[in-house]
Image (cartoon, rainbow, N blue to C red; front, side, top):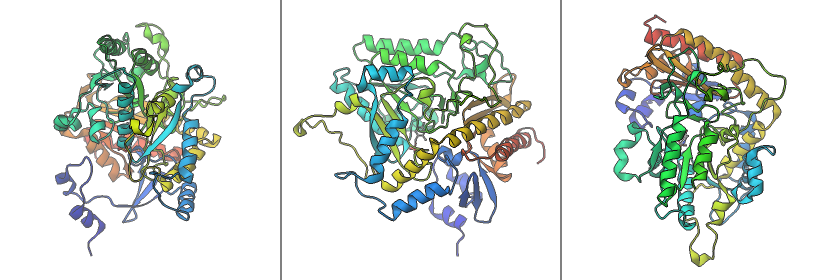
Length: 512
Ligand SMILES: *Cc1c(COP(=O)(O)O)cnc(C)c1O
């Protein structure tokens, strides 16, 4: 009989993978998971250091999510949302809208009180992050046309943006390596400079052994560029239909975090210039970006170049309850018009996605049947019951105080552990936003000189980590650590220690 690895080699084609390389080595065949641990078909154990590509929240094989799925399975697995309502999807809709509402005391809440039609109030379900973004983009496109704001609606997104792999989502993206080949298939969208403090040409500081957001010196030139782009389009009579962004941290771009204050200002500029705000929270949603602590890693007073010393993230638990919003937008008091959710929606158990829409966007699709204003879009598995049941269980857990406390503790432990990586000259930048960390590998931290991508530095380090029982994937030269929320302090220590050892082995020639 063929082994599972042989079957895979014979029949499967893996995503984002050079299959010639894949076929040269025996793959790890994962057969079980529990908590932050995965097990392969030979009984070897691993830590899941990237939450199975950014999806898993509470750990694998979680009894509460398992129970919710099994209970739902005993009733029905799937029925169509085309023509019928169902139990868990209806409940999940309400739970999502409540969770995505701004906290009562925030400025965003005051805004929506003044103008209730801007509040997120409807949920459109689909299957994946890419489809959630397709939905958002079609909705924004039609809304712009129907309101007469634009005849040929155009979108603005961030440099190096990634919003998925379907053709519409790819059109919003700006990663040449993934997107260039398909350019004849795509519609045109504009890009604007994203804040990437570590490699920003406007950041006039020498590299330091700290997150570049903490020691940057600039005058928000990235925002000036955004303002210019938006204003030109508006003055031309065709404002952008939408400003598309990943709040807090751009994931596939290489874990590029935004300095405090950037998102709120950027969204203010876009909105003043007539664009809808389209937040891609596919990676950042559901508590991933943690408490306010690692978000706010530098002082606002840094706006004035060379002023007060930068703040360091606090590693001590504070006694007051830490604010830990479930969505990254809320760290910056931003309330988008459209919000895309996927990866963690079901706790990372089943493929399901949601696009949350404002009442105003929803209303622009209302009319008499024969007006044909209907949103002609949908998928076979829209509103799937198993996915919805899983998501409800996950969301319920996320909202329990114990879960918030555990996330804050894990976030602090991660901050503390990551500090030891600065000792490696090949670590250029360590960027953390809550429970997401990106470690950028460079030839020499003093010059920020990047490794040539052909050297596969990030990939080789991750391969060395896998040999030590810690699984993650890099984005180019950036190693990602994104532990499930159930990860223990001991496990997070091991993840970071193994990364350090693997850097030493791979990039400093130290024997394992
Ligand atoms: C993963 C991701 C997507 C695409 O989601 P899929 O489920 O892979 O289609 C879109 N946007 C962001 C920010 C992502 O991280």
